[in-house]
Image (cartoon, rainbow, N blue to C red; front, side, top):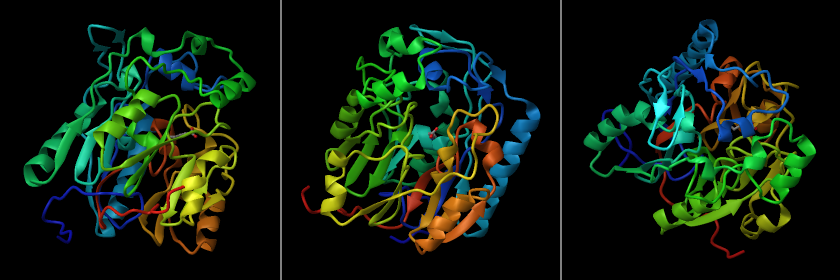
Length: 374
Ligand code: DAV
């Protein structure tokens, strides 16, 4: 059945078919969480965030919300349906029988929490304690979709224990150094252990029948195996990007634009032995353009490579952050219409245009884009 704005339908099989219904995050009440094992491993060693935590300054929250609201309005003007999460009081501590942390995080990047595969929306396990309860911000929407669309499947992956056994203690040192980090990343020695399945939804890219999942800080091999068992009709591929000293989330590293075309971060190239399925089926993997900035904005977890964290509206139209002129120019030359969207002042809240959204509905069906065995 075709999409209509009056009828809720959940369906999205890939990253590029025409987007009709999307969730856009909010910056309300966002906190820099207190130290905890998984988060400390991710905060860059020279970051201004080291050692500080608490609610982010109100003027930065207001500015990020202004940008997110403008982005949501622009999408609505283009005819999309846009929903927003419901924040809870993130200053509250989070406690389970196994651990305690003094605040939660926020609800800016829905992409990290919600994985839409076909008619299903799956809540990821997450691997940070401060994000353990974040799914609650989306439960109103999940309930509404579930009530309104009889075909929607609402699933939640097993909540992890997140005891200290989930984290390698050698990552807890303050000064590891980039050379050591790169060596560990190449050896696939990440901060998370194989104690139990862990994954963030933003480590998963959807290519119809194939799911490509980054093994790194936020997703472990057990998490990938869990996804493989959970989606038995899919082929699930684990990938690595050894040039990344802080490997979390695939969406500033590997960005499909349309069938046959992927941008790859030139500092984090997909290793040759993992390219076979793409090459056998005529997919082109091109180096992404350089970011326009030398530094991330203040108090930001992410790298400058949010430049390639674009949102594909349809295979010919892509939203790119407005200051990322090199990325825009590259996409333009690749024959894509670029929609510039100002978002840089919201990066610190958890990411760029792909991160701050989650798919609810895209046109198209589940196709096999890699029919030739590699
Ligand atoms: O390059 O810092 C950011 C990904 C956010 N979802 C990076 C990865």
